[in-house]
Length: 110
Image (cartoon, rainbow, N blue to C red; front, side):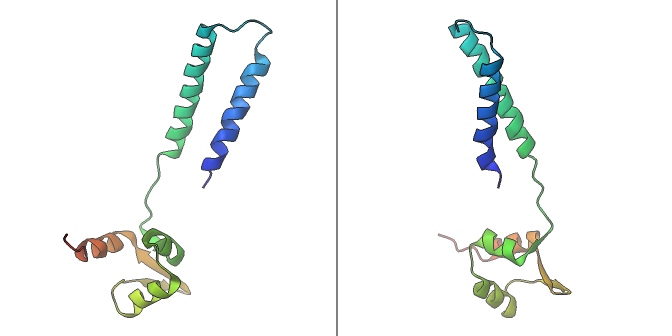
């Protein structure tokens, strides 16, 4: 996750803008313009991060993170046939859509 880098980028933008400004008195209009520019930069940063594609296959670590389960629980789900998987070489892969289907099928009505 690189979300912790946003404040550093924003601070860099702020300092560059401040350093480039000639020595003068700032008006509320100047601050408003700066705010609009800063918000525009924020929107660009967020839009660059927005397009995330969902992978068709997930590795074990990704499934454990997605379902918030331990390695042992994931192994039990494989062994008892609850969670289908594909093994290629030493890598175990799980189909994302299949995981969603299983979650939906096992949903308990409240």
